[in-house]
Image (cartoon, rainbow, N blue to C red; front, side, top):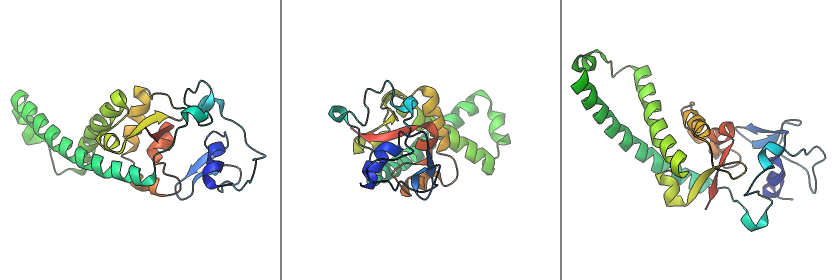
Length: 197
């Protein structure tokens, strides 16, 4: 049995956990799946599979996770889009603050790392959160023909997308999808996945 075939079970098992280096592993053994035909400890997580209109096991509507290459292309395109959006958002915010309360511009320390990080997180939530909430796709995902869905294939809620967007600002999170399966930490924590469409 290939790793891909094993993952069809592991992704819906209650005993799965995510490891940054190995990807999805068994919480009992702390290793990747090693079974050949069936897993003796497999226990289906019904919260993932019940009411799934796009179940992985429904061959007529099979979902395929986006490849690591497409995820990387998404990251590069969206990083460029995020930088451009941040610059425009910063200028507009500066103009608005300058018109409403000009003295505030003198008191803001733009060289402060905390202020920079908070501004980055705020613009990231707007850039990623709004696009993914309304369409399930960012600019990068439109280009690579991929989309964000819940593990069961349903549309993520606003709260889920907000959590997913916030997770992007965990240090070194951007490279987590390069290890193991093509799943990032923001996917694992928010229980979402990026699929081919």
